[in-house]
Image (tube, rainbow, N blue to C red):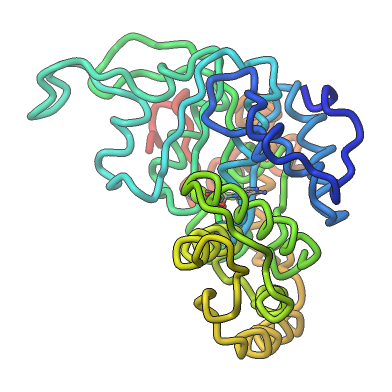
Amino acid sequence: MFETLGEIDIEELDYDLLEQIKPKSQTHFSGFELYYPKLSKSPEIQKIYSLINKVAVSNASVLIQGETGSGKELIAGAIQALSLRADKPYVTVNCAAIPEHLLESELFGHDRGAFTGAVTTHIGKFEQADGGTLFLDEIGDMHPTTQAKILRVLQEQSFTRIGGQKVIRVDVRIIAATNKDLWQEIESGRFRPDLYYRLNVVTVQIPPLRERREDVPLLADYFKKKFAAELKKNIGNFTAEAMELLANHSWPGNIRELRNLIERAVLVTNSGEDITPKDLALTGKDYFAAGGRDRRREERGPSLPSLRLEELERMAVNIALERSKWIQKDAAELLGISPRALNYKVSQLGIAYAGWRKNVV
Ligand SMILES: Nc1ncnc2c1ncn2[C@@H]1O[C@H](COP(=O)(O)OP(=O)(O)O)[C@@H](O)[C@H]1O
Ligand SMILES: [Mg+2]
């Protein structure tokens, strides 16, 4: 689908044409939003683009990491639209927005009478997404108990509704996104490493906008044209000073922030006039403050895998169990310890598996 456009000269973009291009799936993206990676000047974004083209056609789980507003949802939608499941359901769940006690019912559904108030059967997101893709947004905010249940579905490709008996088999591709540093979450015990390994078959790390400043003028221009067209206004260019402000801002809210800022600027600018610094709600001081923030971040270094022995042990035990289909005797052999020692570790670490009768979470 991307190919139909051929090589694009970024300077000569025909935004109208891009807006008209409709993706083949029912997702709500405009042409530009689907094509934007190719329109970016950032080498990192180009790499992401070729990665999502490759992974889209597989069924591999994808984990998208990036700050808020950096385009995670957009990338998830693009992967779906490019995938072999493009015409199949695309179901999204925002794990941070749904209260924990409702999330499980939301994901797995419940049978009538499963709990007080369950007056009808509810089909969960996993069932709705059967054959297609389930997008788990803000997965870093998911409660560990729910994480354990998701992990089990991923391992077994089946589950039961809350209060239900019937085992329901599903074929669902998972795309997950988070703005959290999942390694940090794992270190502090809030995220399960075994689920992390399951989800993280392919990682897409979206750089923050301040690390790809070359795209700021491109995106600003795009949003200006988009909102001017929507408001039927004829807006001029950004003045040099206005563009400098945009170029120097640190964009903590990333593309979402830029989009909102330009929408507002187009609103307050009179038809026929250029966009000047006073039309932008920016002070110009922020870049230096952000530079300080960036430097501090670099000093800490990139986040590294946890070296806490307990976490490494948990990971090793989980991987061994998975490889040996949860047969403890075989897993013990892989780990080079006695089955008794493994059994002790399993209960010490609180590892549970539905197939073992005791120990069920
Ligand atoms: N490359 C892009 N081109 C155009 N719009 C974009 C781009 N990336 C993000 N956006 C827009 O920015 C906003 C935030 O994107 P979103 O995918 O919701 O970010 P996140 O999920 O990471 O918070 C949305 O309005 C989205 O359409
Ligand atoms: Mg989002």
